[in-house]
Length: 66
Image (tube, rainbow, N blue to C red; front, side, top):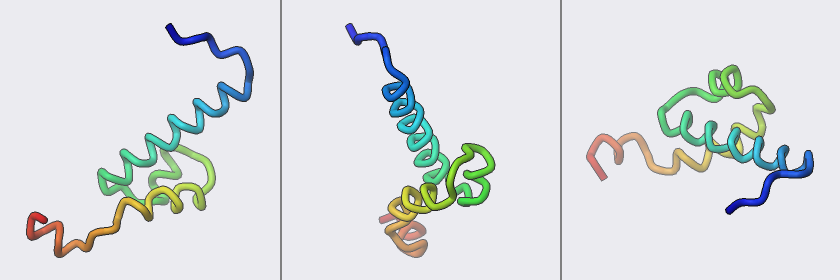
């Protein structure tokens, strides 16, 4: 069984993790970075650092079905 969170640092880490997961899912769905920022909030630089890793393949490759 998981131990209960007892510090605000643990709660902050968990909040950041959930925010990052939401950013990843919205990025995979093709939502723009500014729109992600309006949904999730936070720093646009953080969103950019996460989303830029999701778009490594070109659009042509995606259309071909690779």
